[in-house]
Image (cartoon, rainbow, N blue to C red; front, side, top):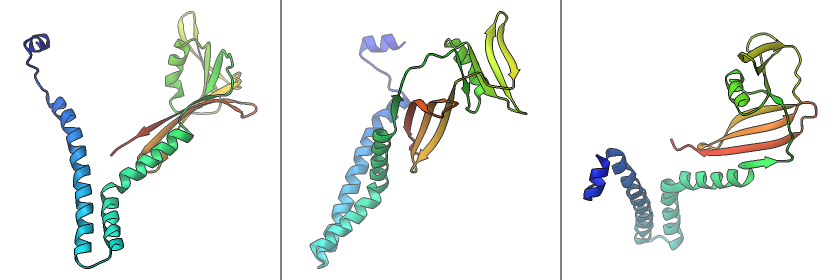
Length: 192
């Protein structure tokens, strides 16, 4: 059906496509309205006999009302991206397995094993001790252990910067020394 439409030069525009095409127009309209209202408020203040400084102040206040949160979010986003985001590795260390400290570690264990690790150790959900996941001849094995044999831990933490910026930091840390040997931070701009 789409091939016929493309071959005939007629493309059916779906509702999603209309929204995607409309969004840039709405953004430009919002920016223009904000600038016009800011300039007009300054003009009104000036025509009532006030100084240029008062007119500029009124324009700046109205501009801040329209665009203040967007400007603050953009500056915060740039700061988080420059300071925290990205992958930072101090050294590469070959390991057979590791201790996963995150929530849902039991559910993630199999995906790590499929990536080539021989074992993944996790906290028990109830009680003390740990579970060690590995593949044996019959499939996935889950064994209760009292002590960790992993030298390194894997942790994922989520954070919030300001009102709209969410971060997710994954770190690899030496269990004995506490040294972080690798860290990856992703920043997500949540606009709600």
